[in-house]
Length: 406
Image (cartoon, rainbow, N blue to C red; front, top):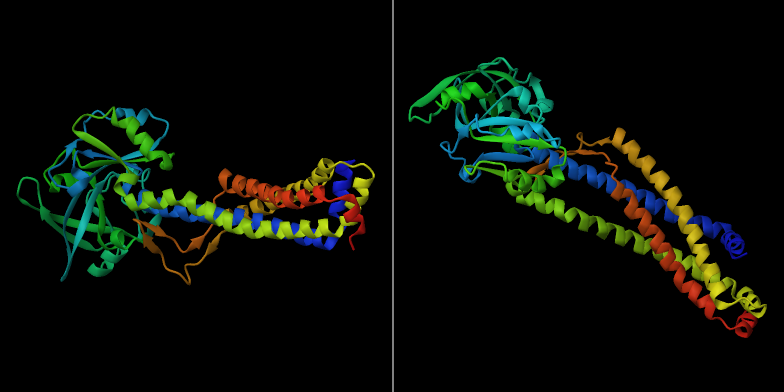
């Protein structure tokens, strides 16, 4: 009987109920969408920081990442075969790095030259997807170079142009050779776009007189947020001369951004649902005030205070569940649309570099369980909490006073 009464009472004032339900549904749906968009921005930020240059994990000689000393190298014959037999590893890329001078006609610019194996680098970073001109390095390329857009602009070159590279080799000699521009990339990160050049690994090893030597191995995993745990696991299997760093150690500011995401999410949820909860509380207090005589008659007929309290509480529970289902459906539908199509803002906004990553001028959603469960659970909790006080007031009414009240 209480269940039927509760359902009937919800629709006694249809306009007020529909307005309250609309506020609950809209707040939960928009919150699910908002959290999905925030997750998309966080994923973009992390991906541009790790998947365009660093990788999720980096193996190098001890101390190399502190100052990138040319002479802190290790052999490509080091026993690291365990990386290829681990399911969580998506790709590994051996690298050699040096800094030198690139010249074209009368123009020169300092550059960071990164020697790579193109096919393996593609499995770790996404620079091949950031090309704005020309092509990426091929597996059999011996003297090609792919430049950042800012560096190419400073040198005044386009695909097909020839560059002169000059640097100091490991044996003390001056290494120099010609390079042919194959392509130009643009990541939105000014540091990489203005100074980074990709060259074949074997070519750079020959220029630096470091045949068979590497400075680092970049690693990509399918669990980037658990990179620190994976690094600790792999650390025990490395030779003493090598170290492994996760992206959080190389980019401490980015680690703080990711760590603060959950806190920011809960702040947004709390602010939005405080406002929603006040609206629900107002609705049910008004409902209880209008039905004061009804509660007095029910008590006079023998209904216990606990039954009245439970009946009012059920009303909030039914409304909360209905709003929860509708809000989740609408929120997931909006998130799916944003995940598939998104909104391109590149016409009005430019990329923003922050904490080693780049916030791209686009909005798209990432559907994660937490972005649905948290708004849904909070909506139900707020609904029940808002219904507690009206239910308590209704249960405490005295039959005589309630019947006489105007």
